[in-house]
Image (cartoon, helix red, strand yellow):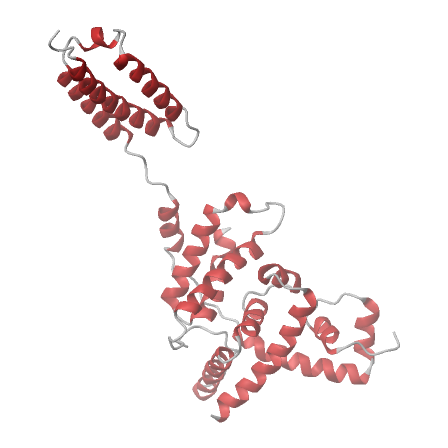
Length: 159
Length: 158
């Protein structure tokens, strides 16, 4: 190697990042490059003073693990609440509801549309099973309530 | 991943913030983000640069929001072996001056110096963390070291 490398290359040699044998040999043997190399080494030694031995508190890993653990979904509570709501709505509708449900009329058609919508919701990929069941149950309850209103309009209760 | 890099990331965050509690929070946030984005991590590569990248971005955001806070120099900067209390005092003062000098540098030079001298990253890893070309990293490292020397002289005189 005839020409002296630039400062950045000499710096890379000092930092152990330049592996080119010719360059390394040149820097070792050329007086001008050696002088530059010494200057850069003193800069590196000075900047190495930034190193520290600080350590995280001993309980860091435990606290991190705690934060990473997912909060369990309250499946039992949600399922019980959904069942209570459903039973309550069924109680409101009365014993003749299912007989009426099967009858032909505008309420039956509306029921079919709502059922289809609910099925699409329930098979949604983004929902986990418990959420799907909970939402499905809640919406069925809502559907029953709406049908009850429509049924009143049709005068079913009065025969 | 936590055991290997947590202390290193903490030290990096400490050099950005100068505050132990903030550095600890930023380290924790780095791992929470990493966990959340685990799918984007290329498992064939070492985790270090990926984690440093997350940490560096968090530290930048922190600096943007807390620029006015003064540095706390009461950390354990590595001090060479000393013989007496007078020498210990001088070296502690030297370390404090160095951190003070570092704080006065522009962020883009400071980042390269911190990643190299605190994080002990290679040139290639610094390129990856900061999304910079190799020539730019070399340049910033060289100029950053020169600027640190000048800044240190200014701190000693002032």
